[in-house]
Length: 138
Image (cartoon, rainbow, N blue to C red; front, side, top):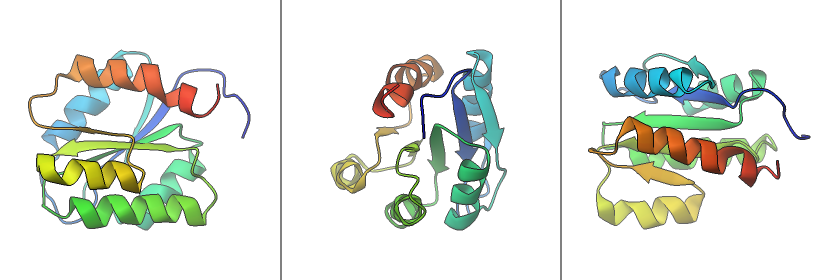
């Protein structure tokens, strides 16, 4: 994929059975208000649906919100599917209730950044602006 012009495109997704999407909606709105294009997939998305949407929408990044405790499995599944579909240039970041001790392993797996409870929407917007296109060589 070449250098993408226009706004950064982010898919915001709630994988798994977690039924709480307020945080994901707050992040989606903050990214949109910052001038990014946001595709919010809604609740109960499978990793396959999330990756499919990201590829179809030519997204620059996927933001996952996980409160269910299944973060290790769900992040890994999304990263593995991106590799399988040769879409590793789509950056994966996320947040939710994720124990500090799990973060190094998630980053080792390929998750670009994890935001824990208390992260400000501005810090997330700033991180996306600073990291998303640079990692793709733009």
